[in-house]
Amino acid sequence: MSELLFPLGGRRAWAVWATAVLTYLVTVLHRGSMSVAGLQAAERFDISASALASFTVVQLTVYAAMQVPVGVLLDRYGSKRLLIAASVLLFAAQSAFSLVDSYPAALAARAVLGVGDALVFISVLRVVMSWFPALRQPVMSQATGMLGGVGAIVSTVPMAAAFHAFGWTSTFAAAGVLSLLTGLAVLFLIKDTPYDEPLRRTKQSLTEVRGNLRRAWKEPGTRLGLWTHFTTSFSGGTFGLLWGYPFLVQGQGLAPTTAAAMLILPVLASLFYGPLVGRYAARFPFYRSWIVLAVIGGSVVMWTVVLLWPGRAPMPVLLMLIVVQAAGGPGSMLGLDYARTFNPATRFGAANGMVNTGGFIAMLICIGMVGILLDVSSGGAPQTIDDFKFALAFQYVLWAIGTRQILKYRRKARGNLARYNPEAYQALLANQVVPLKG
Image (cartoon, rainbow, N blue to C red; front, side, top):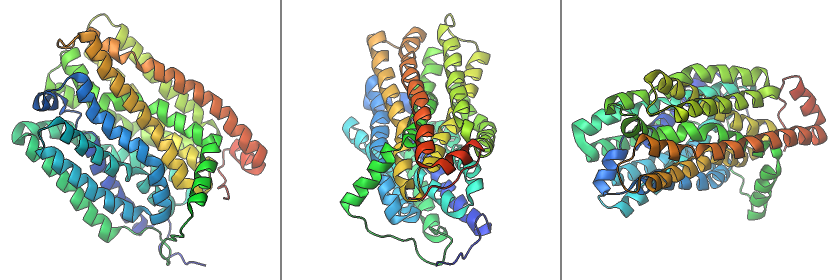
């Protein structure tokens, strides 16, 4: 039997986790680096709104497509190797993006960035699972998402200031160098497990891998997690990654510096939401879906107010929209919590990879459709507030689909657990989570 060299949740655990979170923070910076660069990119590459949206759509498409393969790789190679590989890919992608001046080459660079991004988040979650006791994992997962969101702050006002002071090439190149530095930190500071033996890397046959993936997908709790992630996160992601800044500047008539500063608010709000959601999930796991539905309802209500407001909405309403919508990030983490609850540890990577595709699939659909609808509505002219309202109303389609699926798979997940793991179901009714055996 392997021996525990470092205590779970001890000082070494915090050092390993901090290094992993720093890597995730820099990755979020890269992911959101187009949030304030959209207008400059449209001018640099001479492209339309739908072509501009394709930068983020390609990036998110690659990210989503990589999630299941990354889950398999994570179960095979562990967090450390994947985080090092991610750092190299992110450096290469941002360096290339800083230099290219053709639209196809820029798209290729964003695709590589999507691959690097895909390797990071679930690798960091594996660090949480390996180094902290089970009862602290929901709160630590929320803290991971919350602190990683600081990268979104850096990708707004500081990035906008850097673009103004140093230009396109220097700003994106400097961002790429940050990933090289975090890669070195991972190399020297991260260990996959706190035990005295290296991570087991038993090779699985293709048949075994397929079987593991099939079992993870057939588990209704995995699909509940996927649709939770899908429905809670796409609205805030669409706003923060691309369309929020143009909506505020071109649609609402705000100054660019004001709009960039407002994109910091979701991260600050998540510092409030994250601990609340984490504590709720740890204390009342049977009732997690109610906070998910509340998060979705809040976004629907605030977008309805903004879209129905005659002309431009007043600043307090816009601020309320951004703050309420920010709950989607912590809410989406509950989807990953469902993957942990309804799957044994042997399927964690595969199940988490599947769940993590949800929100990014929804984001790429929404970002792409908003770009297309903006072009249709404006007819090639500069977009107005009415064009943005028409395009952003597409969100209701995804909210309706996702909410229906959450209700469906909530019922199926509970029924499946009660049928095949009655002890685990009774524990869940008592608001306790029992790890499932593979």
